[in-house]
Image (tube, rainbow, N blue to C red):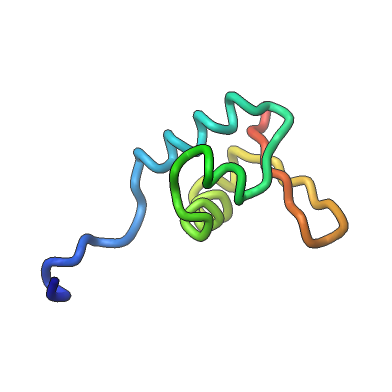
Length: 74
């Protein structure tokens, strides 16, 4: 596959829908790895989408500074 044939990187509404659906089903919140597993997405992708595209839609709960739990805002 050449560089020209590679898919564009960037915002994807379907990925946001997948992440949102997972968070709606888990109102207690989940950490990035669990969201990624349940949405069938890469954890780096989920992390980027949560921090960049969904930051106004989610609450972040920090546990011991290392673990972050994400849940939808009410």
